[in-house]
Image (cartoon, rainbow, N blue to C red; front, side):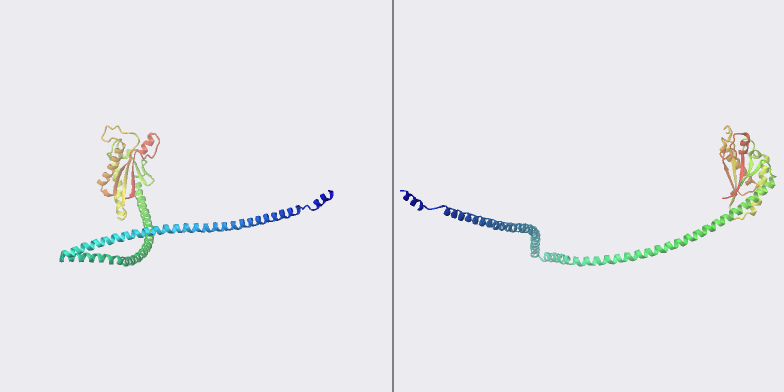
Length: 343
């Protein structure tokens, strides 16, 4: 019995090595399948990427074709519009042709009118062709006009330069004339001053340097009390005597002064600041000063002095020699001034 059991154990199969071989084979197969799957995945991803690039290129091409199609549609619309315009023109021409044919059918007069109209239409067609030629001609004319304007501007610039040169010469001449005139005026003034000095010298000799007759600057001054009663414009006898001496001296001097010196004797009347009563003929100091100057002038005219050599002016109380508020100041301010000057 024991021997039989041992034999059965010896005859039993050991399955483990086979199982390990089968498991190894299965593992290798699985690894092979995984490798094949990874490789397939890689190849598939490369194929998908290439298809995406191709798809992008196709989209770009589609967009470009869309844009071109839009432009083509726009051009097609323009062409359709032009075609419509041409069709309308053709229809109008056809209508016009039909109308002209009808006119031709109506008689010889209508035929001539139709032929004239056809000629006008032909002229319009040929006129369209001549527009460019006329435009070129107008451009040429404009170029010629621009060139002529440039020549005129150059001539004007030359004339302006010549005028400026003449102006400079004229200004130089004017400046020279001005200098000469100033010299002549200075000589005239010096000459008049010399006669004025002679005149004042003669008056000084004639009037014997009386206290109430004096020279102030370039004026010979008479106190009003010497010539006029108080508040009156009429010369008193003493004043007439003094003015007669003045007239004789002035007449002697007038014969010596050259005629080209346009001299005058100015007689200025001045009063003090005491107002008049206003009840007399003269209302205020303005009228009194002017009336006294006029009285002296008229007396000199009566003594033979030319009236065109005399001037009378009244200054009232507004040109005082002494501004003090005293009887002595007021006495000095009441005066008649004589000035030999040029008109």
